[in-house]
Length: 304
Image (cartoon, rainbow, N blue to C red; front, top):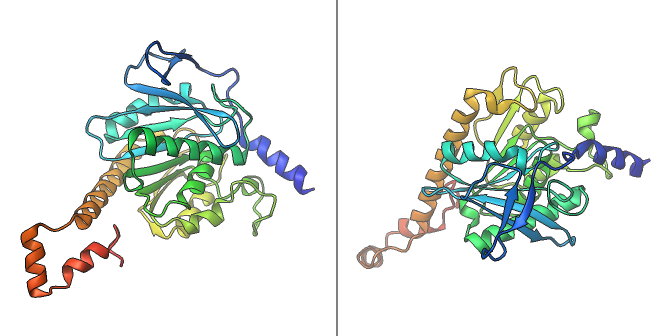
């Protein structure tokens, strides 16, 4: 019974566009970088096919903003691929002034393999490794963004990163089975057990959900926000559905507000971690003032 239910939940969770809305091809003289075909040309995007622990190759795309302080790692919803999301990412980069990294899950777009819960975990881990190694992105400068099913890999990674700057859950799910049935306990064969993983996330969490969502009920977003340790002011979009929240003006306004707050936290955190100048250090030794030591031990939320 458990295997059958899990299989049904997995089929409901993954709807890769068929055929894919884009292709990839090699770029002459660009090393490992690829080119996306079937979408508007964009010389500002860097496309790669990244190996995962599961043996698949996941396609990632990185859009750089020249004034970015933070990077958004975006895990998209269940019925989209990078080709369909292309325009939105350009808009988010421009309005939020952040770098954007996104990817297609195994079996989506030009990524190889088959979609599954654990493959999405391998996928996002490969993309995160790329951000660290190829682009030098640190945890403190990274925001994970999960839309719908993308909330699964997002919370998987967020629960493992102690210094992550922030998390955005957009139409997120409590778990796969809970989308289908209002169960009260977490079943062992459930998928994307976000209801448990969000309790392990230490950074600020912004939850965005539509009150008229007929795919993932509004109660999912409300409960995720209630369970978050570090709650950021949520955005409940009145009348918003599952796939149209970006069309509401309050969406980009509230997201920009969140990004600004996270940029300030990042700036304050780095200032607190910076070593004192020689004169300040001498003064601290002379006066034995404790506040210098305390400021260095505080984290970005002010806790010791």
